Length: 114
Length: 115
Image (cartoon, rainbow over all chains, first blue to last red; front, side):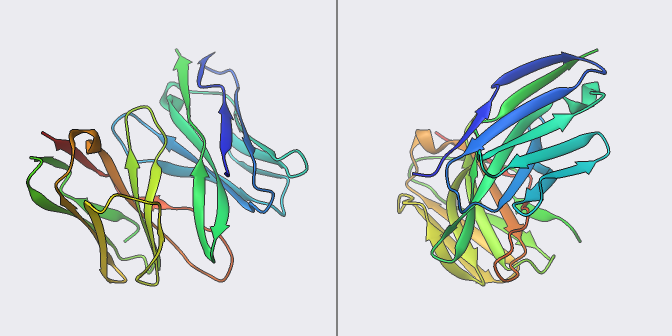
């Protein structure tokens, strides 16, 4: 079945350094790739997304890159801050009988050390 | 209003109880979702409603019964649950425009404990 692999499962960086989280998807028909940030005890929040007709998208300190050929997409956070500490989930959309759903990656726990 | 509101925030129920979770959004989104999330795991899809019709049921046990009374409301009726059903239940909504995908807006969730 369809799946999304996400690495690493945990990531610790020093404040100010960059963090990169990588995902690989299996369904070549997937065309939308959102990233969610979930702080402890809170809801997942959409932080950035990318569609399959775009190779890169940036929003301030956050960027996402997509390689459709390799079925890889990655989240890049620059100049990390303690408030970036959270669990990050990638997702890929798949179409099931005309309805879209997301397959989530297993999550990356990011710790930014002050 | 750019939020998805879920009630209650916390729920403790016995295995013989019947309870309902509620979800409401006023963003005009026509797709609504129920997800179950266990600790340190990703959200796991349960149901998808598109234009108030159930379009995906991810083989969820019948002790969970969804309902979409109108385009703004989504309920999840619970009956005869098991302790392993204890989890965070998340509601989400998204736009539906042709074949384009849009990101979800998640509610804050209902933390359910079955005793």
